[in-house]
Length: 135
Image 1 (spheres, helix red, strand yellow):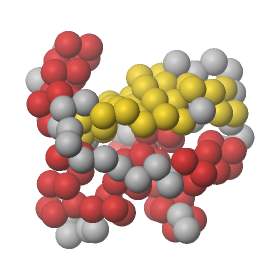
Image 2 (tube, rainbow, N blue to C red; image 1 turned 45 degrees about the vertical axis):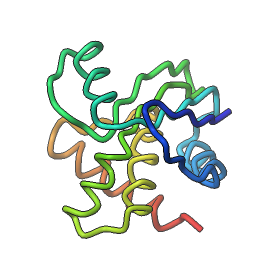
Image 3 (cartoon, rainbow, N blue to C red; image 1 turned 135 degrees about the vertical axis):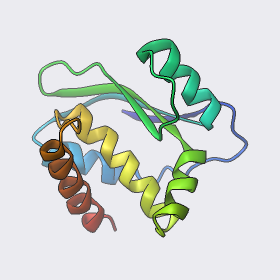
């Protein structure tokens, strides 16, 4: 089950992404377990980054992987503030950037990494592929 939660926010996100996210999981040959998206602001995600990963910088997403075998489970923290800033910087629509980040978290849980240039290139191509399938 995919669930959406909010921390330090007044705004909310449409949950009509659920079917699309489930389709990504199935397309990757995985099964849906329990996935929690926690939408927050920059300061909340910075604190998570500092406390759990010992990183002292802002980011748009942090994914905690609880995958067992082919069953995808995890917690995906998403800064809506950072997504808005990134969309503006990249001259993208907010909704498109939001979908990219939502898919990015699922792809991490599916086993994709983005630490090297080659991994990042594959991750971007997967994101683009699934963004094109959004309807």
